[in-house]
Image (cartoon, rainbow, N blue to C red; front, side, top):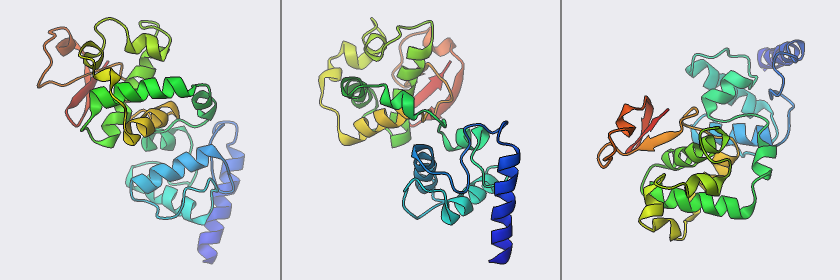
Length: 217
């Protein structure tokens, strides 16, 4: 226990010493929505059993160290940009999530349900993230509804599945993407290689595959 306490104190000191370079990082003693999202990912990936209570204590610290060691990261118990990216989250994005209204959440959830029904949960979040990545891109409309209803953009709009009522997973996936989880790492396209008919989409650089979908830039 003494060794563990010493390690925790040392990590806290190192974090304070590097606060300028690790702005926005969370570590021992931190509280809030960023910590909650870190804990949610650690629980999801099997590194932590305790509640996602938004309080960075001993269990969260141990889980972060374990995650960092297993993923080739600096095992300092501090969740900075590199560890956050490996967890699939972006720190400090709670304000972004709050900027979306319920109507936008529901619209995005309908797209997720129409396009990714039957996909693994991370694939649902990935589809939602592609929409949000397009909103941020100068090459696409700058609103969620604008991206979704852009002519020819999504099959579920063309065939009417966009009008189906989304389930709880689709709504949760939309919110997770709005909270900064982007499993695609910035992709702006996705397609199912088993059903894609556009020759152009096959020319895009595929970054990863989740379930039946290829995600590309």
